[in-house]
Image (cartoon, rainbow, N blue to C red):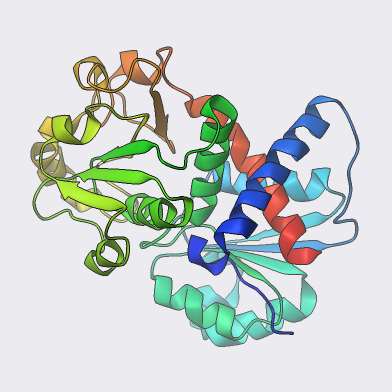
Amino acid sequence: MSVRHFLTLSDFTPVELERLLARAIELKAMRRDGLRHEPLKNKVLAMLFEKSSTRTRVSFESAMIQCGGGAIFLSPRDTQLGRGEPVEDTARVLSRMSDVIVVRTFEHEKLERFAAHSTVPVINALTDQYHPCQLLADLQTYVEQRGTIKGKIVAWVGDGNNMCNSYIEAARLFEFELRISTPPGYDPDSALLKASAGHATLTRKPQDAVRGTDLVVTDVWTSMGQEQEQATRLRDFAQYQVNARLMALAKPDARFMHCLPAHRGEEVSADVIDGPQSVVWDEAENRLHAQKALLEMLLS
């Protein structure tokens, strides 16, 4: 049987994803109740990160420790990748010494090459095109707060980035309506939009996207590696801030999410992210529980 990877949400079936979320909620309750659960005892997670991280790194390392295993963190300066070793060679070596590998990199194609030469499961911890682990946490949070997301309406406001792309995949797999509002020139992947026709639509007006929605989501306007574009992006996204006026157009019980880190006063106002509709702290915590469930599924 070939090894399974988690590079995008589409690597799992809708049934598997639903089961994973249910297990994440169960694992969260077990931790809250103080129950020890070590299904990954003596297992080793190798973490290869070419981008900086707070929540992703800490959640994966904590998950392995709490589940009885261990994690090894590697940055480019810690490995021969930083000195030009082919990614294929690194994959061959690390997969002989560890049980699962988490990769955070720039080009999604590099992650695919890595996975193609790994003999153990590889998990996408973020690429420029996708961020599926964050979507697991977001979906878990919505289920905890409001029940099934099937048939609900979600608004994405801001940059059509890797998070937006993963939300497009989620809309198709979980059967919810996704309304995306981005400025011209910042659209998400057109092929993904086409593949999710009937579930995801694009509009230029944030008000049209948010009106009557169950969930509003945004992300930073300037992602890692785009710092030189910051001034231009601040100007282009000026009308796409999620603030109290915009949130007032959503349903009264709508929730607000942001994968963090957030820039208050840019993509979101302080009164929204720190307000009663915001569930960003539950969302951040759920990275831990969703990834525990993911590790269990891949290593069981």
